[in-house]
Image 1 (spheres, protein in one colour):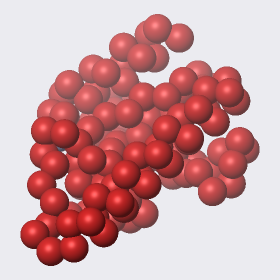
Image 2: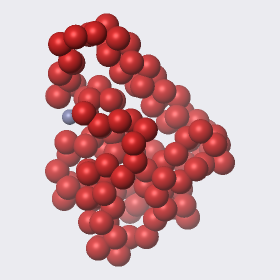
Image 3: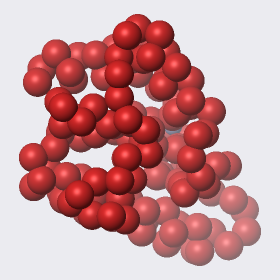
Length: 123
Ligand SMILES: [Zn+2]
């Protein structure tokens, strides 16, 4: 279980180093002008692409949604709140002229790299 606040998590680090190895250059944990509270995991500033690596637990991935046995109501409320927040953040970014790419942490690394590469090609 990983924190939704905690940065430099495993999946994010792996994706960052894979992208870097392929010659992509980007900012990490980048504070956006649309809201100081929002930090984006991987940001291509010039191309205005914001990439989030969403943890399966904290962001409520339906494929791996296993809630802890205790305090189920607490956890489902917390995860719902996270999902609502994600949607607000996405909407805010879109309004600010950004594109948003969310990648589940369970996505295999090579596929995640391909998703980012193709999102950049579409720009
Ligand atoms: Zn998942």
